[in-house]
Image 1: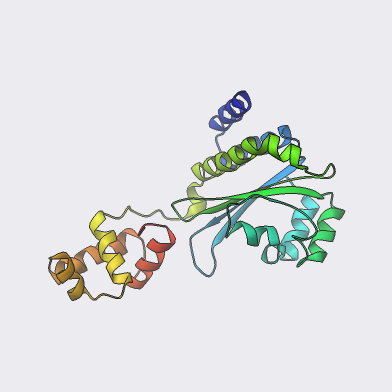
Image 2 (image 1 turned 135 degrees about the horizontal axis):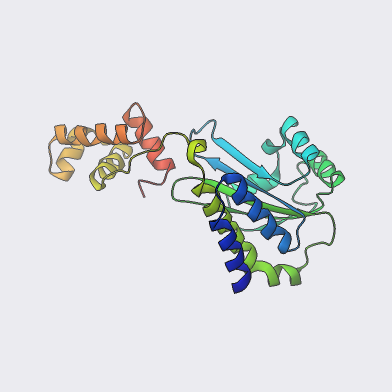
Length: 236
């Protein structure tokens, strides 16, 4: 595993853009015996409409069909990926709830597949999907390649997120320890006066920290500050 991971890592460090980074991830997938891959990244920009970026070497005609049919909303592998870090192998049982999508995918040569997600402390969820047209994924191959596959998932996430730039939108300032503390108490339903008593500070100081947290998080009020900081994992 060592020499292969080192080679892929070196190529990724030389990538100067998102597209170049994904190209190296795709090459790595091919070196593991797959024909194409996709990396989807959901950014925590909104609860109701999170921004999603998709990089794919799947057939162009399938990518177009997938988008037009809105298959991302019914794709069982995506549904699994946003709630679990466990890898999955495509099979008939997995796609029982989306038979039309599964039939069409196979008609485009996407018959054998593997996928796994990666979550990070900023609330971003990524998923790497690898596919090929034949030769089912057996236990022997999965066991042999398991370390490389898991490594590629995490390395792909680091490489893609390192190049996000303008795709991620305005950045946020980190919260201070006190800002996070008052937001946690606010999330528990405490008023500024109650938090002041708990922390042995004044209510005015509590409001000062909340106002700074709101500014750092680029939101408009304390409820939005709680929601965004929670989504980004800043209150843990």
